[in-house]
Image 1 (cartoon, one colour):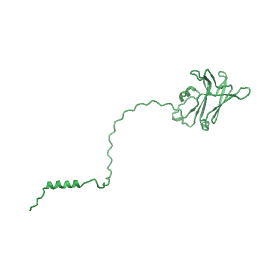
Image 2: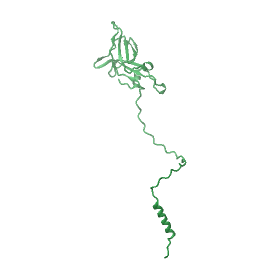
Image 3: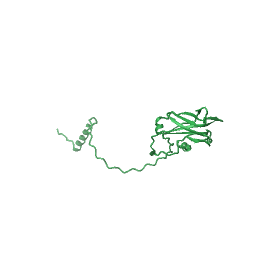
Image 4: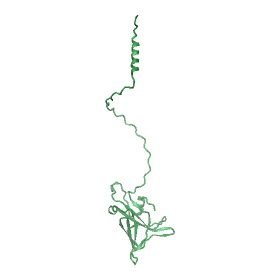
Length: 198
């Protein structure tokens, strides 16, 4: 009997088939190869579109504390009623503000209706036109007002007259940070800067 040998192409085909059939994914992964060198930097991309502009934020108040307009009652110091005093509770008036901050008190010698305000910064030394000298004195959590007349608040036709407001300005704000310089005795500047409502 004579053996027939397969042709060379048949043997190659059979070998490749056996190799492929014997390969599988069941083996352990081989060790990671060494990292290759970094490639060259790519070209700079095109600039993105400009964003939309936002509305300006509200003016900051730099931690300033202020009261509403307050009704205040004065009491006579002596029996001749030539000197009067009043007290305003100021819970946030602390020692650090007394030592390093600023305190402003304003008197509305008019009333709280629109267009009838007459705001005066204290102390007030106007004995002729206004007819009063009013000085503020400060201690922790309390503002005392001493006056040469009874400047007590009162109501006429539903409007509050002779009211007082205080502003506490903590110290320690660096003047080099763009803090706007304003005249704290000019109530209109103060009102605009702090966004106060009457």
